[in-house]
Amino acid sequence: MNRRSFLTNLAWLSAAPFALSACAPSESSTPPASPVASDTLWVHTKPEDVPPLDKSTEEWRSIVSEDEFHILFEAGTEPRGSSPLLNEKREGTYVCAACRLPLFPSKTKYESGTGWPSFWAPLEGQIETKKDTKLAYPRTEYHCKRCGGHQGHVFEDGPEPTGLRYCNNGLALDFVPAEETLPSLRT
Image 1: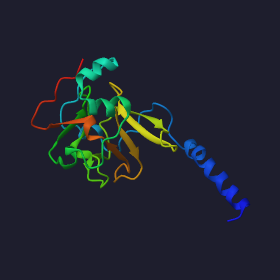
Image 2 (image 1 turned 90 degrees about the horizontal axis):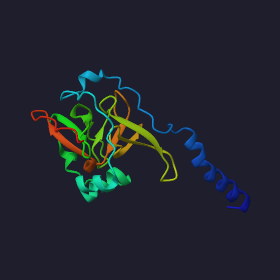
Image 3 (image 1 turned 135 degrees about the vertical axis):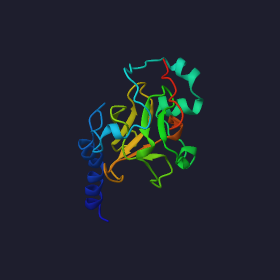
């Protein structure tokens, strides 16, 4: 490779992150509504009047485990294939491990082959998204709308009807079987 083609290729590579970021979603947006009627996705009863929850770092550290804190409030990622929720097949609801807000129904969970629990849609109005550029290319991070706890990233390679894959850290969720009552929201 000659110097000119090397420099040309280098210029294109350096421009790629900027080009990709132009296509990325805006900060703190709510994902589009699912094409499936939202009232048909709920396994448990939807909680009413859910106010935002604002706790200090020290308060969250006293509530959740160290590993959960790292994922939820430092945007960490658990090791691939480590979550027991990967094999969870029962009907129920996945709630935020921090504040207990219902986030995903078992009806939208599927086996993505990625090594993390995956869903094709969240419960409507329960998550928010923002642009994440920590890996030098833009991704869409999503988090619990109530406490801001980081859950994972959403990708456009999921199954129909949404074509989305909400790739979730298992430690950021708790599973509540359909026959059990949802836990009270943390205050």
